[in-house]
Image (cartoon, rainbow, N blue to C red):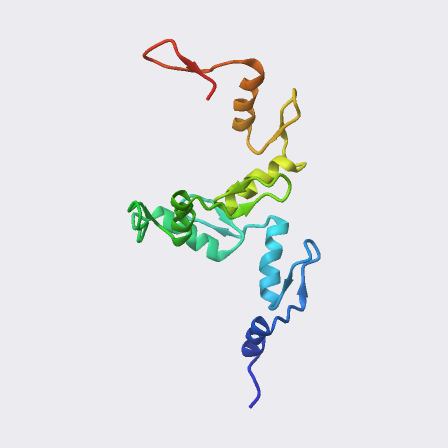
Length: 171
């Protein structure tokens, strides 16, 4: 009995056959459409847009996950503190608060993070994309607000003032 094309493709997942190669990062894929979807990360193309807030995503599944944030339904609940989440990824990231687990490690400086998103944001500080760098010490930042906060370490400025007393703070 001949196998269907879909079954043949699916079988590649189990036997480790990954004939589809990404020329940008050398990742290999067992199914061609997975490579095509992966390439969207490199191109920066985000064809899936949320109709509620205009945020865009490279993958349809990411859009679907995001759309749960607009719902008041939060079916995922932490068993330790009862905090609720709209999606399973939010709960998974939250659990690290209780366990102390920080499974995502920066390959450059070995700093660890609870979520892949935090690691990705951090990694910008090591790249040429870190267009927010300190003019005094050269340290790079992923966001202008982080550079602004860092600059107070050089200037001694304490821009946050208590409304009830004369105490001031750098952050």
